[in-house]
Length: 76
Figure 1 (tube, rainbow, N blue to C red):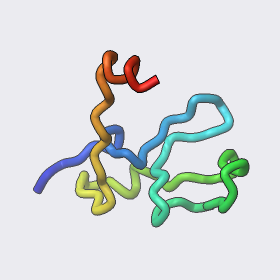
Figure 2: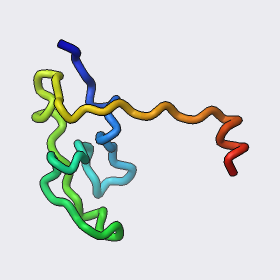
Figure 3: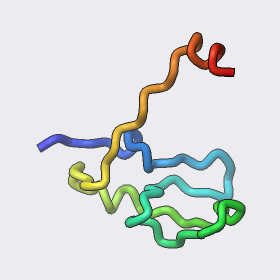
Figure 4: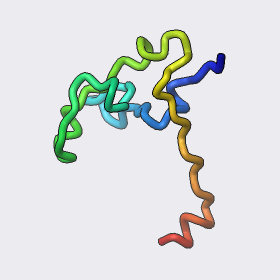
């Protein structure tokens, strides 16, 4: 059995400001989901500790590797 860490998942988001909490933003695990993008501050993520208690989250998806500095410069 592979152990997964929530911080390596693409659905895990950490709060950039105090109003938000860390959690799982997978659509199946969220407590409150908003349809409109301008209401994202009102979304409530799922408790990532409870979802991944045994380390075998079924919704785990690895983060995409970040582009190199040269790729980001050439893209703009």
